Structures are given as C-alpha cells and as structure tokens.
Image: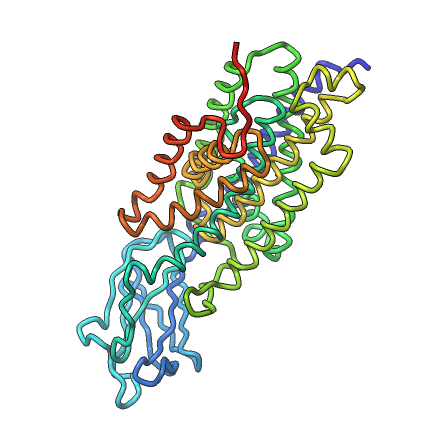
Length: 429
C-alpha cells in the first residue's frame, strides 16, 4: 500500500501542535493568574498534639497587602496570596493563642519566606514542648527503605518504557525524560487550566502520552528506520529532541514550579518502624498494577510474543509474517504512555517543572543498566535498587548529593557486569 509523502510532515505537525497546546500560555495559568498558598496546622504538643483553634495568621505580600486567616477546629489555616510570588512575611498573633498555650520559641512568631509563583508553602509554628524522639541513623533506615521503594516503583514506569524501546529497536532514547515532563504538564493542563478532576486529568494525560508515542514513531522514527539511518545518528536525533522539548517547556512555563489543584499536604499513617501516606500508597499500588499488567501482556499475549520475537531477531520475525513496524509502533505507544503516567506521579510528589525529566533521565538509565538493558524485569528490579540506594545514601552523604550514589552504582555495574543483573552476555565481532 502506497503511503503519501504528505503523511509524515502532517504527523510531525500534529506532535508540534499537541506540544504547543499542552504548553500554551492560554491553557497554563499565567503568572498573574497564579496565586500562592500559605498553609499549615497548629497543634499543641503539651496536650498530645491537640489542634489549636482560633489563632490568627497574617501574611504580608511583597506589595504590602495583608491577608488573614484563623485556624479552624482542626488547627488548620490556609491563606491565598495573589501575585507572582516573592518575599512574604507570615506572622502568628500570639495574643489570639488560648490561655496557657504559647509558642515553643516566643521569638519565632513571624517567618519570612520566598514564594515561587503557584507554590503551596507549608508553615510550621511549633506550640508546646519538643516531644520528638531524636532518631539515630539506624532508626531511620526502615523509613528510608520504604521511601526508596515508593520512588523506585514510580521510576520503574519510566524505566520500563525506556527498556522496551531499547530492546526492540536498539535505540537509546535521550528524550525519554522529556516524555515524563510531557505527562506531568498534560495533567496540569487538564486539571488546572481546564478544571477537570485530578483522576480524570491523569487518565487523559496517559492518553496524550499514547497518542504522542504513536505520532512520534509514525512521523519520525519509522521514516528514519526505512531510510536505513544508523542507531548512532538516531541517538543524536533524540539528544536534539530532548533539548527542543525541554526549552519549549521552559519557555511556556517561565521556569515556574506548578502544582495540581488537587494537591494537599498528605497526612501520614504511622505503622511503627515507618510511616506512609495514602497518596504514596495509591500511587505505588497503581504503578505496581500497571507494571504487572504490562509484563504479563508481554509474556502471554500475541502482541507480547511478537514483541519478544522482534527484540530477538527483527529479520527472522519479519520472515515469519510479523509486522515489525506495527510491533515497534506499539512499543513506542506503550513506552510513552508509561512515561506519561510516571510523569503525572512525579509531578504530584515533586511539583510540575520543565526539567523534571532532565533530573530523572540519568536515574532511568541507571535503572535499566543495573537491571539489564532490554530486560523488562531488569528494569523493575534496577529501579527498586536505585530508589532504595538514593534514599538510604542520605545517611552518609548530604541529601543534595543523593543521586551520586546511583550514578556510582551505574559505573560499577558497567565495569563489573556490563549486561546488568538480568541481562544476557552477547558476543561482539
């Protein structure tokens, strides 16, 4: 069947228009429309963390405007500060504290903070004596391991897509991190700009990811494959695409940190050795369910068997009647959809930024390399190892350098076992 030449530029145009829609200033809230939020909860440790009601909190904006709220019966306060952020003064009126209740430090009744546009700042005013138990490094290990597993299972969504693309095409996609950013920004557009519920916005952002995966393969990667373009040249194309998308995201967001409308400070559930939030548990559960569904599909469905055949030997798979182009297109669709879902979750926990994919990309590469390039289960195991290592490493190194541990492990694996934990040795030459 003859494919018109016009289809390729049309598909490329579709991707560009879609990205422009997601990042358009008319859809994303402008700086003038953004409002910052100052929130917190007042509890009295002298009365077993009982909420403190009726306390007046005042916020003075950079323009000198004053905004006030009073803590409710749960001790919570929330103050919206219109504008583009800046240096604000948050003050607790000590005269409104109940009788016999006082701040832990009387000199800390006012706090100065710099707010980014759209930021939700959580402010703490300690009331009553300090009853915290000072945890040792050993006491922190269970909590850090749980945090690492939660981050690792979300990271595995992106790593799984990256590993599938590499396994079937041999292409190292340096633009994969920007697909996570695309998912986060799509969810922000649907949730904030269009006012849809967060759950629906998350589902639609995954649909956008699936559509972009199909469009980029049909409009870019398939034509390059049919021309016989080498993998090195295609990898360079992914590097260029990475910078193009990142700069587009930065331009249309002005480098701001954005938050979903559904964002709230999650309450923790203490189970003894560690605590977790319902939000993190739900995201980890969804991530695990999606990963299991994809791995089972690759093992037991017709498409999964065809994918594994193409990954092993594309020419032999084609000779047996498998449509290699259709399989590769399906892999791009699934891989981009998984990346979009990972981006939605990371945007919820870290905030939506233009460079969220940039900071995640090296961790994705470390995950698939440690687990084994092209291995689905390897991507999962590698992501969990990287997630736990990142969190536990903060026991011995500053938190700002915690990603360095993952990159050191990447170097060690490449030196000791280049094929990864679950990878297979291959003869070269």
